[in-house]
Image (cartoon, rainbow, N blue to C red; front, side):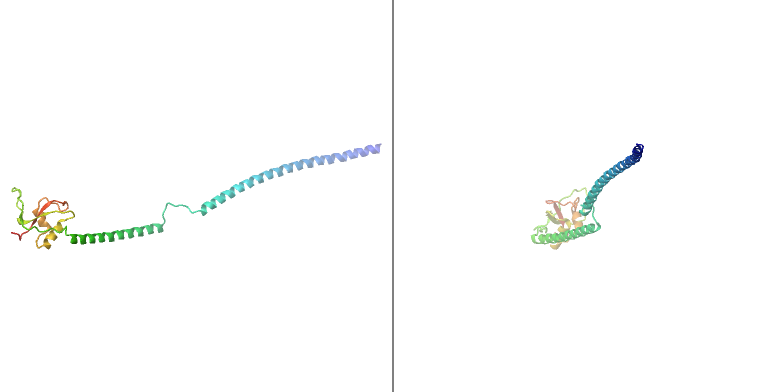
Length: 196
């Protein structure tokens, strides 16, 4: 029995360290298992972050690849615009010249702006005697201003008809007359030194 009890005691002593080793190994396994679990959770979180970053990169690529509406103009755009404005200005000037030529032709054809010489010369209307007497002839023609007339055009028309008159003489013969403010229906005196 002594032998048996020795064997039991030796077996018990042998089992105790094995159980002690099993408990230590189990603790290490539990510890490693916890660490593996933590690593797996961290990996899952990093995977989510990587997916979010991949979506952001994709959105940024889309923004970069889509053409943007830009409110600013490039030098080339400004250059083209300047050329277009110059072309429009050239066309406007050409149109103006064409209109002036056509108006000139129309005035020659219609004869409206050419004053018609009255049949009888009229005497210059009596002026206020207190004013100094003008050094212009007392004989001439009465002319009624028409729309579009200018003093120089009236003087030229009378010169074309043989009356030697200048715009200065017309202004002197019509005190208070403003060459820039002629209106339709106004009667002016056209002096003629040759008329008697």
